[in-house]
Image (cartoon, rainbow, N blue to C red; front, side):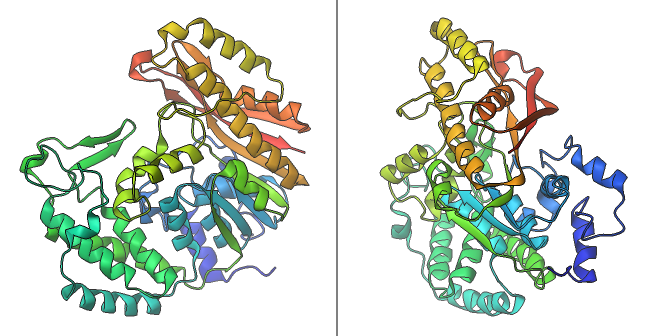
Length: 445
């Protein structure tokens, strides 16, 4: 496959710290080694200014440099990359920029659309024309709060309510935006507009989202968003995303498949072997990751009722106990997991939820299912690279990397290595100290 044009190469250098050497003869071995170290690449707190990453703010995501370093570590040009936990789409868009075919799986329907929007064949002309039509239609579209009638009661201001996420006039303006987005005929363009709107919803609301879920802003009743703020933010976000489409309009168009589904079962659909399987699953910290995107999922119509919300939660990894599900343990052997589950059972009375020991076991069974499919799909010269993080309950440490390494050996992976890349803070209940490892687990056939 031919190299991309020099203009694209320069853009790639500007946005990614290191590109594989077959694309850039100027890259030295020292640069490759630095990027491959992984220490600064598994988290991407400052990624909001990078092309495509700035389409939606993700608190937790590994960096494009981590993907390019993983690709480089193969020592040859890969044909296919798989990411079973698509998230922000870093693996998908980076693979496309490197002219590599990719498959990504994402259970969250909004995030799946974010990924699809990033890799879809949009053009600047398409978006310019759609923007003009959108603005004209917006002027003549009446507000209709009935369009938001499916939302939970706390979402829209109304008489007698003590709390609301959106003032009634902002909710009315949102209904206009949603109606005009639905009127866009081209599905790729429609998805782009929906992602732009999703990117500004929380900023134009009375709440914010942090590691503990959704919280109301301080003095929010005195500083509520306005329709003018919504219009301003939408215009700014549209221009930001449009700039990336324009700048990368001539980028390579490798095949990128985005599967919306549960990675525990969706990977069975994939038949094309992979040279690299790279991902970071949810950590077993008993946090329901669907809560982070609750506003976007409801307002944009991905969730229409409580049953939809429950269904989505059931399709996520068993990393939390917010809903009750069946719990089964891994079939492979892990002495570390056996010891950990025994310790958790011994202190069950001290746990804030009595189901935590079973949840931890089921979490590793879920990842075991993903690794079983990864082993099926991995070529003999390929690698699996996972970014995982430890957790802790009642002073019992969940050594995620060690357990996964033991399970991987049990299922027949020939080479298994672990590299700790940073220390994360434990929860406030555990003292808030840096004592939980984040690691890269690398598997080879």
